[in-house]
Amino acid sequence: MPLFQFLPAAVFILAVATPSHAHDVGVREISVPAPERGRDLSVTIWYPAATGGETALVGDNQIFKGTEAARDAPFLLGPFPLVVVSHGSGGRVQAMSWLATALAEAGFIVAGPNHPGTTSGDSTPVNTPKLWERTADLSTVIDKLTGTGEWNKVIDADRIAVLGFSLGGSTAMEMSGAEASLDAYARYCDSYRKWDCAWFAGGKGYVNDMPVEVGKLDLRTIDKARFEQSNLDRRIKAAVLVDPGLAQAYREESLKKIEIPMHFINLGSAETIPLAVASKPLAALTQKGSYAAIAGADHFSFLPECKDGAAEALKSFGEVDPICEPTERPRADIHADIISLAREALQQSLGE
Image (cartoon, rainbow, N blue to C red; front, side):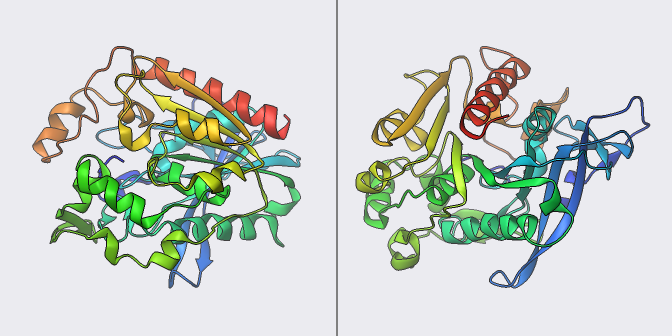
């Protein structure tokens, strides 16, 4: 899971640009009450839109390129399938705009929250394994959008899917019915000590957009009952899982019981995919699993395209992960592959 923590929340807001043409994708940001969190969720929604609204760049900041959409544009008449999305550890949902926009163009409504406790500028090791909080976030978003109000008029509540990346992939796994073993996860981190396990080893976290020193997290101190509980949401009819975390911790019997289509995507080739997210064995255990690997990519290829000078800027912030380092193929080409795989999987599973 990427530990992309350094950018404060403010830089991920919608940056208004001069309108250049009409858009067929609208974007809105709403606040959704989440009583269990003790705070509202900040949710971004991309949707098929009629002409109108103000052109905005979503996810644009000093490191990443944004994606255009029409802010507050009128809805097109639905109903359309809903895809709820979950960002990775230390990320933000706006950074998924390149994919969400493409899916909205294809006729899906795409919505996701910034998960408190695992979002850029608000992320600590102790909050990272609390997947039950993240799954509850997505279920709350579904409740809101399919309940009373303007969104339920354009959403087909019988066609809902989940899509997640990294820790968001773990979230999507659990919403689909996967259950993890805390003992298995702890044993994995005892020996692996990379990726998510390195994050749990302590050092630095982020609170209120500021770095804080944190000690080592002993995974065995996590609430075992909550960690291992079922977070299945039966409204989910399909899942797209990109480099899902906790790959070594899921109980085989829970995977075998999953009845919905599970579309796994790994970024890289067999010899480069990290053990932390290796998904081919997971796909083989599910009843309707599919698997694809995108050669020439790495885990960070899922993040938005980087701006010129971004790699140097990241180093100046003290970022150690190769977020903007070049891979064998341009990130734009890798994104095109992910879009194609995700779009086809969702159209196949939910219908266009």
